[in-house]
Length: 261
Image (cartoon, rainbow, N blue to C red; front, side):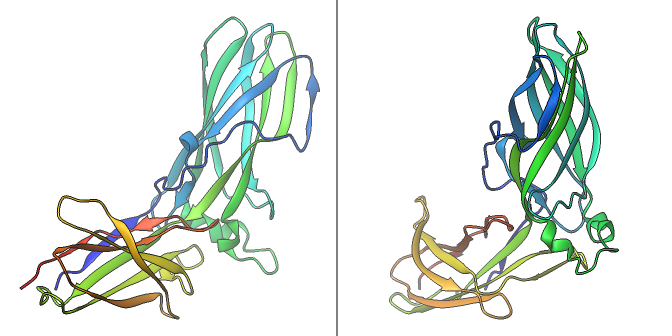
């Protein structure tokens, strides 16, 4: 019996390419504009329970006199307006006489999320997860400036873990193989992983040297556990795959190889 686990925390997992979003509010003077914004290289921002997550917000900025600087960058949840994130500064690279590409570095410390809104009635640190918006103030060499509170939309998601255990090993050809597992996700209130219940997860199989394909699905129980049975007709590897949600990352467990006897 071999227990396999995949822990993916604070890394990008689900691609969310961000182009310029319609501005909810913008004001300024002159022709300076942010023409393109990409957050975290197009990936969701995944935050676990321990590691500080740093991520870039990259902006293409244009003005006929050239770009002087990025005054400030901020971000927060687009629905709740909560934004436990720190702006660490911006570096800019001139790509032409009127254009610069500037990259802001942002930081989310999971140990600070719960404290951030602890004085608010009904506060739940996990409500921070979901769709966020990025905001920026930019300045040109000729005194033009532009302030926008929605230059891009992106997702901040809770990290997740997923295990797979296939038994018995080895299994008799044609016999019943039981595949179990557990799905958990980061809780930013107590900084622990808790069971993620009532979630549909795919059971996948591949022959040696082949590719994984979905065999069936199962739903996590009240403790985040998965359990199903399949007929063992050939050797190969089994794994669970969770597609993720708007607030929780996708995660795929490591495969558990099973031989026949």
